[in-house]
Length: 431
Image 1 (spheres, rainbow, N blue to C red):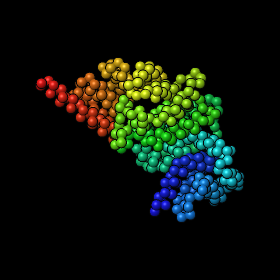
Image 2 (cartoon, rainbow, N blue to C red):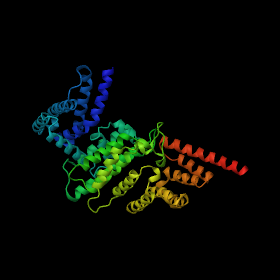
Image 3 (tube, rainbow, N blue to C red):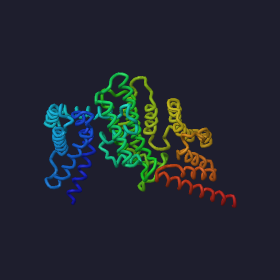
Image 4 (cartoon, rainbow, N blue to C red):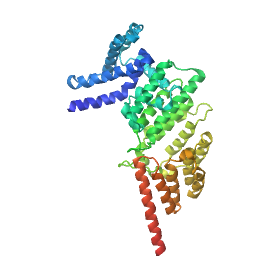
């Protein structure tokens, strides 16, 4: 039993590390129309390992074993598949050649990285919807199961499976290829890739419902994909800016929740828990993002993250600089969410009364109708001003909006704080 459990844990780790690379590699050899076949052969290799390793032992080079078995399964499948009959000999020859290449050969490593990069660009083709692109990227490149993707997006397994079927049908029906685009098409496709990666990251960094505040697996997969694009010859400064932004934010994950999984406000975070390696990675890519004249919203957000990262503690944060950056961010992206985030910083620089005035125009914005942070921020500012009864109304309104369980617990604590402050005020008046 113990051996089976240990083998399962090892396979799960290997699957996360290798599955996407193998699927991308086999998809190139089999053709994008046969992406399902590539996934099936990788799954077959994993299943065979689970069946044999507990009894025969784990091979010395487990990754190479999986790579070879997946290739052999693909060769058998091609020979059986009548739809590939006109191309089967050539495909089998290429699969056999690839299977015989040593796993540590530098040319193979370079090819695997290239295959994975091409797969990301195909998954993020503009003709595929963003939701389907994210699901397909997580499934084929990230090695996520349908159930894991469904859990991440709080969707039914069937709904995610349908998105994947639809995306793969589009690949087949429209003859999408793994060829990298060029010129202006490359810039457009790269923008789609960055949108998908950032969407994936945000879904992990700010979970909207459920038991967890953060889905670290989504955050780290988005960061990995971003770094893969940044390491390529096609990386524009905006790519490095996005990687810097994600690295700075991921560096604070351990400090965002306490040991009970409850939300910790930014000003209360223990900076000693911030990951210095990730902060260093953030500054490395932030420096690279400075090339050229382009200033994207990723650049501005990365600059905000860099300003936070430079502070030794909460008291050292340069809120005036951050407010200037939010002014720039709002000019590039005049969304109500950015305006709300800017208002929070206004409170740090100019006080809660000015911040309340800044969010007043957002009160009737339909895009923020169910956004719990709007009434939550308002409640926090009112509490700072000693207006407990109004703050309590805002926190109750926030509790009526969709949010995660840790956020809901935080709001309840703030509501209790309003009650305690009210009682304390009444006692003072009585005395």
